[in-house]
Structure formats: structure tokens, C-alpha cells
Image (cartoon, rainbow, N blue to C red; front, side, top):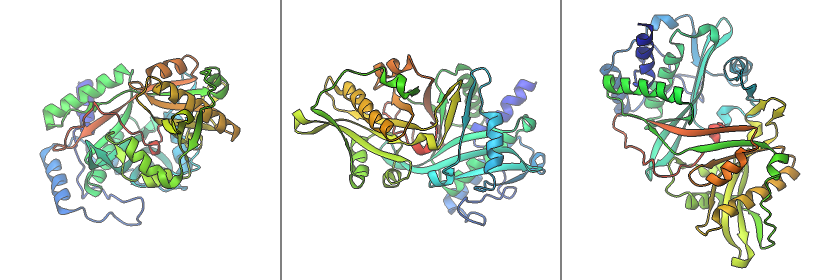
Length: 407
């Protein structure tokens, strides 16, 4: 009976069960008052979604919580206390911390964060990063859902389900979200199986379209000493690293990543943000200075610090969204570019290397780095659909937006 009840409650997360609007005051993080009324068509869609389903949540269970928008600075320490209770690996000795040097509200131009406060303690939190991107080549609103946390003393009360419902309601009605996405650990079979059970139940009960899992991306973290032990041996003087000028970056990224899923339409904002270290290319003098490989770099150590044993990712940089020409040496060029750029970043004070590359595109390079990685995780983006949303073409690569703060 308990198992059945748990499935029933959890199906709401993925079944688009939305709390009554009159019960929940939804606020925008950038405004001091309630969010303006949603467009009639969107409001009608939300009402239809609500009326079509049978909520199991009892609203009276949450009257003792102060449910509100996250307050930057005022709530920071409460959040960090909660995060330390929820995001640590006891067996792996892995600990994560968000220094909050740059508030999420600054890193992510749009989105919402709702918290549950009780007796001066943060009992729960969930965030979304909402942005316009290209899906199947057409503009769509995507909501990236992350950092769901519930204090151990407040678990098994449906609080996380309720917060997620609030978030979904906000993003559907205020931002007209078409797709919800999240990253899942690819080899966490138990978690994926449980999600599948929930989504199957939500499909049977509410007609929720089944989600899609996309390609695997591998996050690998190494000390720079370990990273440089893998030197390719390529000292060709014909190859050199060149930083793309800021004024040309967004146009270049748009061109080389054309056709990728979830390509943000605000690339200009991304390349001008403080944590963006630049877009770099490898040029070949013997080919009239032609570009043979490229990638982007991000100051990830200022967003998230991971500690495992004696190793810390403090002072880390992230290399991501690599591309290369179609020659037999294309993948080799990515490796050479990574090495030479990492050397430059080391000289500028960075201490730890992170890469986030597709296993479909760079499997050999990923496998090599795995052998000495202090931190290694294979991630897959999972996509959830609104009822009438076009399905994502999962055969296409994706564009990783570092503002998701996964690494």
C-alpha cells in the first residue's frame, strides 16, 4: 500500500498536475509583486491541464510553510546549509558547494526559484532556468529544472512534489514553457527505472507523453598535473591557438553549432558574461591558417566546487562544446587545442581541469581521461513534453549551456 501511494504521489511530478492557482501566489524573481496574468491562451491551457487531472496533494499540508520566491543574499546561507545536508556523498567522500560568488539569478537571465521556509529554516527549494532555444530548428521555450532539495526533517510529506508543481505551473503559465529538461546520471539504473515507472503511470493516467533520453556527455575532472601527463606529443609549429574576438563569437557559435538541439537564442549574452573565458580555435598555418578545431571555456570554479578526498576543483575551468573538421585528424586537433589552451589557463592561475564532451563524438579522448579522473560522471539530458509539443529529434547533438551550472 505504501509503495502504491508513493507511486501515486510521485506521478504528479511528471503528470502535469498543477495546484489551484487561487491557492498559490506565483511571483517573478525580478518583480516585487505577483506575476502579471498569463496570456488567455496559456491560462486556458493551464486550466484545462488542471481540470483534466485529479490532484492527490492536500493543500492543507503546506499551510505551515512560507512558500515564496528565493531572496538573493537574504536566503543564501539558508540554502547553503540545506545543500550541505542533501548533496553530499557519504560513501564516495564527495562534497559539493556553491560559493554563490555569482547568484544564480545573475548567471541565468530568466527562471524562477521557489522555497519553503519554516521556523527560520529552509525546508525545501527548487529552481528552473528558462530560456529560448532552437529545438528541431525552431524557437521554443525550455525550462531546465535543477537543485531540488528537501531538508531530511521535512521529507515524506510531499513537499518536493508540491514545489515542483508550483514551479511547473509558474513556467507553463508565465513563461509559456514548451519543454522541461534535466540532466540524469546515465548509469544510475535504479533512478532511471524509478523515473520510468512514474512516467508510465503518468502516461496511463493523464496521457503524459513519454520523455526522451538524449546522447551521453561525460564530465571529467583532473588535476592539471594528471591532465598534462597525457600529452599528445604533437609539437607542430604549424598549429596555434587563437581566441575568437568577442564581436565575432556569437555568429561563429551559431554557424558551427547550427542544427544542434537547445542552441540558445541569446548567445550574445552568453559570450559577454563574466564567467565566459572565451571561444578558442586551433588554426593550421600549412592550410592558410584554416580553423581545424574549436571549443569554449567557462570559469566553473566560481560557480561550483567539488571536493573528493584530498582533491578540490577550486580554481577549475571547463572546456565544452568542442567541434572539429571532418579530416581523419579532426579529433586529434581537439586534443591538441585542449592541451595548449589548458597550459595558457594554468599560466593565468587556474588549477583544475574539467571537460564536458559528447561520448558519441570524442569517445577515445573521454576514455583516456577517465583513467586518471578524480571526478567522472556520464550525464544524459532527459526531455519532458507538454501535451501537444513536437518531439525532439534525439539523433541530433545538443548544445550545452554552461549557465545550467551542472559542473
